[in-house]
Length: 230
Image (cartoon, rainbow, N blue to C red):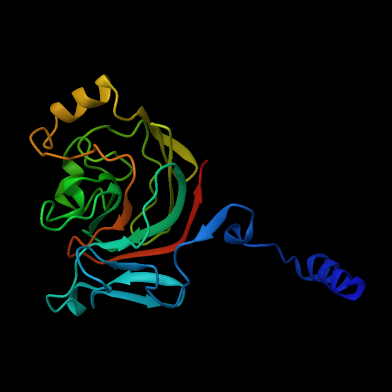
């Protein structure tokens, strides 16, 4: 035991080793860097061909889709959580981080029929960048980001979704860009004024799955970690 502890101290001192975020208490890695274990295409049991796990990155490749793409969703549902994830897009690309998804293909054909979305986008190259509340970091079609700390296309962005007992915070590159209360009257008014106004079940579930969106555009995700909040 003494030798093991001594070696651990040496590793920290001489090599600067530190535990990864997923190794710290309470955090769980949602991506092992090599496989799509723990994920599946919405409404299916396995991940579609478009999603490639390579070199620590989840890469969506539209050309590899072959009619077998679709949004990638977690096997597990989450209620109160802190999600951390890094993303980057190719020029003109669109994707999204969708959460509180109720997976019922017979009733809801897409993840976004029930789930809220933090937008992932090339603001300057994609047409959605011209639409208010559709830009990177926005709570899609509901709340515009208070600022735009998004990095240029091809660079990695760090996104966070923190939801605890209805209090929702979205962070992009360390900056709080959206802060709201879910499911209260004010939030219901936001939904009523959006494209989702007549979508039964949208943003009503308080526990659900998390998704990475297939928008038929190239996108990369990595360092996907979650901490459940009690």
